[in-house]
Length: 258
Image (cartoon, rainbow, N blue to C red; front, side, top):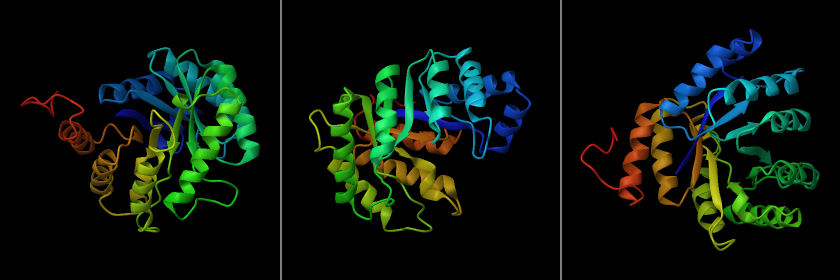
């Protein structure tokens, strides 16, 4: 299970404040804390509505990679901001993200090839997020084949079935699990999969409970990676327990602490 921390994101007030003041030490301490809690990669997002997005992304990437060599997941819808993050990256890098829209794939897959990046592929297009697992799988297959046309092989992709808030779209949680299972049939070896976990609890009460319950369900369906909050101790306990029960990690009596 590959863990990407969601916490270096200008959407959070504390991160936005550190960005505005260019407080490199705060950002670096924050990044190290995510890694100490179990993250294996760091999602880097400048936050919404910034006119200085490219400059901020470059600063964030350079600041974080001064203290760690883990992969960086460059998270932005803006092509200029994405390019700035890729140019600044010395660490291994993940593009977050493309959709199945032709225009977006035609811009991002060449960037992935140029910078030897992996790519998160969101199963949506200009019409939005499909209602069914089957339609998600069709979009995933389109992105796999389009990526290959740009010399991006399936092993460099993460397929994202797009978790939606349970409070607004309760039926979609099951359909995401169905989509994960379908994704596994699209290539041999099976493609990697990823979700933005906290979306499932957006706007709900007791978010941690929903997040950790859904994570265990997704892992049972074969989920490869998740963008999540590694500082949520109960979530991480659930993850470690699921790894034991799925025979992904060797059992020991102190498996939670280990």
